[in-house]
Image 1 (cartoon, rainbow, N blue to C red):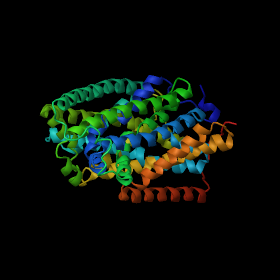
Image 2: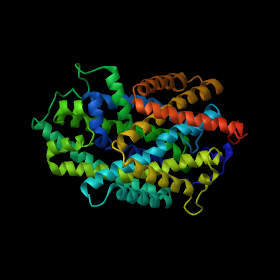
Image 3: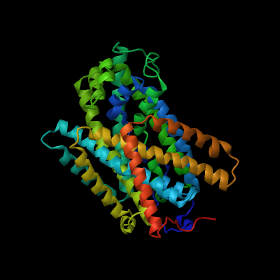
Image 4: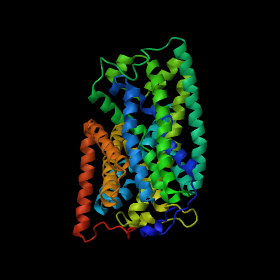
Amino acid sequence: MSSVEQFGYRQELQRSLGFADLMIYGLIFMVPIAPFGIFGNVFAVSHGMVALAYLIGLVAMAFTALSYAQMARAFPMAGSVYTYAGRGIAAPVGFIAGWAILLDYVLVPSLLYLVASTAMSSFVPVIPVWAWLAIFVLLNTVVNYLGIQMTARITRIMLVAELAVLAIFLVVGGIALAQGKAQTGALTPLFEPSSFTWSVVLAAASVAVLSFLGFDGISTLAEENREDARRLGRSMVAALGVAAVLFVVQTWVAALLTPNRAKLIEAGDAAGSAFYDTAAFAGGQWLSVLTAVATAIAWGFANSLVAQAATSRLLFAMARDRQLPRFLAVVDPKHRVPVNATFAVAGISLVLGIYMSTRTNGIGELASLVNFGAMFAFLLLHIAVVVHYLIRQRSRNFWAHLIAPVIGFIVLVAVVINQNVAAQWVGGIWLAIGLLVLAGSYLLGRRPVLPTEVK
């Protein structure tokens, strides 16, 4: 197992996670029932071809997962794409990659808390959204502070619960289809000739890909992985594959049972209730309530728990290299977690989540911004694979180190181009600010420099 000491760091985090822990962590980050929450939006944008949108999203993420696996072998350290682009290409590029994916990692917990708090407030309106948000943030911060092993134990329990709810929906949905409740042809969720255009499907994939974001979070736990670095990459690919099967199956069944299809495509799903309406149509109000509450708990507790952990590790890695304030690199001596980074993520999530809860379309705005940051950072990841392996190491493994990264890059470019225009603008502004910060570092004589690299 590679040591972080050979890259100029001290081993401060606790190595206690195995392959199963990492894969479960990735699955919880992606949320096996993630499509429940955004099903209506993907359905509307894809004109009902939800399964196809998720399959294209899988293709984009599959090649990205392969690139992550390659870079995790070369640089088994916390920091995700920040570390890979910085050491695979150059430190300044790593800063921009880290800055870009911060838009994903920092905003994801806020998005998750907001979705969950909104759902819970609809069931228990006496408790306002901001109060639910504070409850979720406090609970997750305590669990993450107690250490990565505590987080791992909680995620195992939550995964079983989510899979149980998903199994119930699929069984009830299957019975409904057997009873003749299908609202469209069996292949319509995959291909609808009258509505199919690449721009429509790619735009839908840019939304659906939100469900896949999270497998990359496994890479932030590299310094807590107790096994060979190759296992880290394999756990990412395995988690992505399992999640993809679950996403396609559940959206296929839901798309076949969705009532008022034309209205949903035309008007969209501003209330975010399309999946729960479909569940009610398939099995009754009890199933609608079950899936809605499960979504709230999965997003607000399980998913945001691991999102907070991943984000704190990214902040820790960048601060350790003095590319963010140094206090974020402080590690709690007892629990061996980046304590200040954990609290910082909690504070940002609380403030931003409460603010966005006051906006008319706060959830939609956050979702679009999250995707842009991740997609741009993934583009730099693919470049890093080619530069590090093919150019520097003179690798002759052309599939893993040239063909796969290039295909992944091209697919991601197509997805980014078809993203929400507002997300492109705000994401572009965020990147521009990052470039200004980088330029300021050079002017102040503090250009990004990484500790001694392995020779």
